[in-house]
Image (cartoon, rainbow, N blue to C red):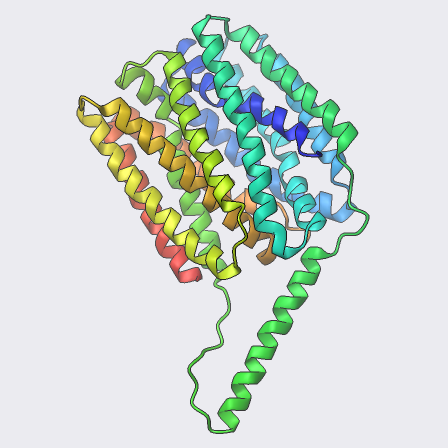
Length: 395
């Protein structure tokens, strides 16, 4: 039940994810303004993730940082209702991102410490699936509010109120674990297992036996590079996408929310399937497959730019499949990151995603405004493929 507060938080940001780019354009901003806003926020997330991941593990207090995050978001979103300046919206959103990320490392640690390594996949999938439903409901709320033309102020107040609800519920339901040792135990087990394999291979060599196995260790640099590249491609693709639907395909704001709701629906289905028990080997092989699949889907979006008769329907199908693939990717990489990244560096996962996201969130809108959306989709597809190569090297 401790996840319930995160459900309401995701409702708010599901609504905000589509509303905010459209809001910036409605205020007279440009695609480059959206890129600057997203890039500035994500660059600030990088040091913030380091800090929140370190401090929550150092103090072994996780609840307080979750509460700080939700309460700060409540205030920042209310402040956004008081301005209609594009520059101020960018500044406020960037500042908000520093405290927004404060709940991410503690949440990941709570799951890792409250459950055994064998349950991490299933638990991360259940958490992400549950909160993805909240995100989907937020998109539905956005559709309803845009249909009835509720106005920007009421939309932002709703997002602020949902985070206040998240704060109150989390204050009641979230508790810190009494003991924090599961990640350290997994690290010890990995070291012992690696040493045992080394001794076994050495014994066979001394006995003159032929060897059909090699002593291999994960390529952590390749894993980190894959995460960054995947995040770059995702941000290049999704940051300007609401404007593509709105300006290029001439869809009303309500239908843009529907398109993103379809993407979220695909994510919910993906999390449901990923919640089934899987082995560690399955995790590693599935990461590469899902990244390659996302690459193919990004290339397929190029067809949507050619003014096809069924372009909107094709885009809808692609978004559903994109959401499905992302769900599997996130569950497997989150589980592996909690195993590979040592304690007091729990924010590293968000740092790596932030590095990629900050770069991609500016590149995507810049390419869309200076060249064309076709180049956005081509670039995203190529970088997804490079991420696939990196994850193959990791395995």
